[in-house]
Image (cartoon, rainbow, N blue to C red; front, side):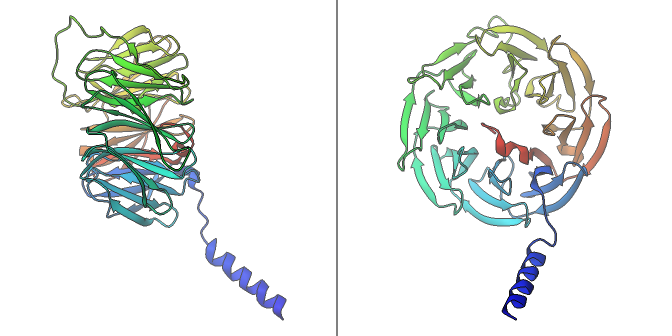
Amino acid sequence: MRHILLTLAATLLMTTAYAEPTATGDLGLVIERAKGSVLLVDQSDRAALARIEGLGDLSHASLVYSPDERFAYVFGRDGGLTKVDIVTRQIVDRVVQAGNAIGGAISDDGKLVAVSNYEPGGVRVFDAETLEMVADIPTGSKTIGLVDAPGRRFVFTMWDTGETWIANFAEDAPEITKIPDMGKNPYDALITANGRTYITGLFGEDGLTALDLWDETPKPIRVLPDYGRGQEEMPVYKMPHLEGWALTGREFVLPAVGHHEVLWIDADTLSETGRTKTHGQPVFAMARPDGRQVWVNFAHPLNDTIQVIDSVSKKIIQEFEPGPAVLHMEFTPRGHEVWISVRDANKVMVYDTHSFEKLREIEADSPSGIFFTARAHRTGL
């Protein structure tokens, strides 16, 4: 009798827990910036599954995923850090940790979540399970370009002081390495997928600055220090996002600040290899996962257009207008499709990256960032 009861109990438990099994690898979240919500989407079905509300100010929001792809950590402009369970489709926890946040990162072991702050500045680090703060790192500056690096490290840069700091959490208390002279007013940064090269873009002067994180004592390496000199300065309508960078095999493709072009840089020597004139000021220059194409969107007032660049010829091979206020793009993990948020049309549009055919439109409320769960397994995303 006891065996029968145990068998019935186990069967009931399995029926309750697995009545509707969910595989997370096909899912993603779309930021709905106007209403403080995120839209859960399915890549294969090209469909919205659920709306999760109550995430605060998402006017400039991003997110990262836990290693098992189940939890998303959403960074809101109001300083909110929200943990979302995409299996149960609900908020697990939420803390307002600062007055104005600008993004975050998750450690390579998935145990720590770091948030980069404008107000009061600095970086705060939280336990990924409980959202309890484990470290407060004041910097005396707005922080930008926060990324994860191998070895339980976070790398971030100061807008005001032009320093980059490396916070190593291999032990309980973080060990901080400070690297000065990165340049005037760094505005964003990226890290390569192997965790070796960290590059900051500079707003206060021409060029970029790189660090070799494999060096025991990383030192600033100036990249393209004269790009843009001698050209007519143009107003910058929107800061480009270096985290929307492209690596096309042997070359980086980066948006040029204040100019209608993207820059091509040799990934080994960090020297310029070419430029491609574009429709407007680039915001994101994003490589299809195989590196053969780079998709570019643009700042206001030319933000209704997408251009596609062939990475071999460096020439534009396609141009189209998805609609008003194209804000973000996200490729499916193998790159056969790209999802594009068109804010003022209240739609996410899905395109085939080979034929450029539009495959689906998905209703969304002022969509901006699109984040598929494959990001859980990539450094710097």
